[in-house]
Length: 340
Image (cartoon, rainbow, N blue to C red):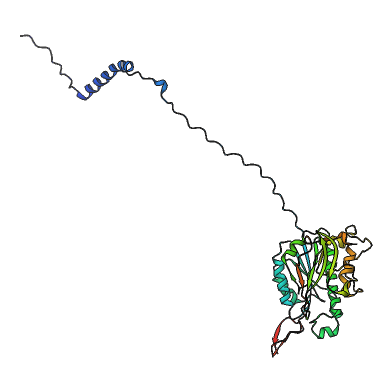
């Protein structure tokens, strides 16, 4: 009997591998029919649009140099002061008014005689740009006035007040302080509109002033009569002053400080020293001073337009009639009330 050939065993059948091969062949056979019957048009399909590159920020415009604000005229307010019972009240009241005025403003406070510590203490907290100046020697004051405490204005007292104003003019001229000079007494009342109007003056300006004194039943008016801003005449209620050249009050005019040292800016070039004169009667002091600055009304500017507004009042209230409480007295400098 013949021997049978050796038997080779079959590999085991793998069903997952068979199914995968079958599916791949089936899909591959359908691909030609799908392209023919589905009419795929790939040309009309939207193409992805790439994002645009980020736009760089716009270049910052070149910063132009800031335009400097227009130059504002400096107001130079000159105030004579002296030791008396109401000195602190008067200076504080005027300081509160000046603090409401737009800057720049320079307050020149001139003490009678040497500059006192009491006045310096009052000015230190005023919140203003100020300069505390001395004037003539205290020995120039009359002895009887000092014994009375300088509580009311004697003609000699008014002469000392002129020296105080002249001390301020010396300081302005020596240091060449440019601005508009205005004499503002501490015991007068001023409207804020006055200080706004002053900055519109170019050379010399004037305006009417109301005056009220102790024991007078009516208010006196003194100052220019204007056609627009041109001075055409003067008005005064007092007959004894009608011979004056200009009926102007000391607190009723202001002028450019350069007129003190620049002869080309004033009418009389022969004047080399513009000051209030002691040799002239008190009623003519302001008139004589103005005559040194301007020749006639054509050099003047009336403010405000028409000169029909009262912007400051001269009270001239005296404190000699003050009655102190029993058992109290004033200190030697007349600024503090203390018990006996």
